[in-house]
View 1 (cartoon, one colour):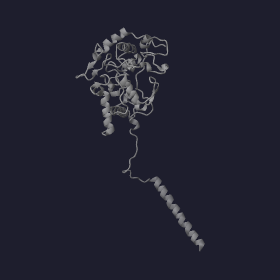
View 2 (cartoon, helix red, strand yellow):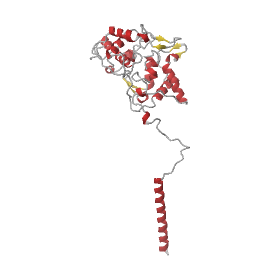
View 3 (cartoon, helix red, strand yellow):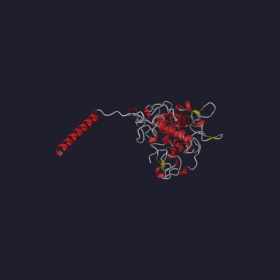
View 4 (cartoon, helix red, strand yellow):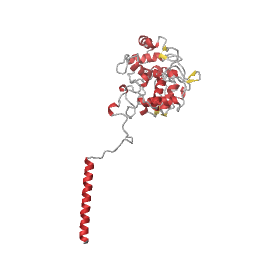
Length: 326
């Protein structure tokens, strides 16, 4: 009797095992379809085909119709029409330039100090302050130097708008550090001092149609900003700005000037860009205070920095105009 019960038990168990095996096999071949209508599935924001690997591949984007998109739109206005904003009561904070005077096409043009991809770069080490800086600190550096103004609060609506704009135009870039096309082009630096007389000829032949013979640009109607910015004088960048350095200015000019030039279709030779940059920076411009505090580690100070102190015995004139064979 006990033997018969045990036999029946084993048979039942065998059938259960067979049924389980059939069920598992069926699920492997025909997996169940889950209802995903009530939950969000995370997916990449962009496909690999849309990722850009060079700033020149950037295409105009449409900001989303949500709070972040609205903030990005405001940031774009601040970048392109900076002269319409940043008033302290009735007093303009800084000059009448726009951020886009140097960061061309709203910071999207290759080798024109573009913003595209910068959210993948910052925080980063900056030699001028000898520390790792946030993107907000770097933006304020531009306010204090290129805009000849003062820093804005890092948590202000305006700062958040600018950073949000940069984030949005950087959305399709690989998160792998610097993107080709950022910064400025390289050029073959002539092994000589800059020739200001030649620079003047280049300026008169290539630059005055936009910037005027007096270098003061073309103001907009109403006088808030400029169609073409001044290159020296009270409304230009101050002597502590990056563009006040000969080699930085030459590299910007090489890829972007005269209007219509690009990094792959330049209109000036390296020597012409070198000489005209020196000519432009030979004129008076606003003075940045406390420049002697820049580059706490003088060994990291660029050769073309136009103001002392230096870690060498090279003359101020050679630091400003070359040759940079030291």
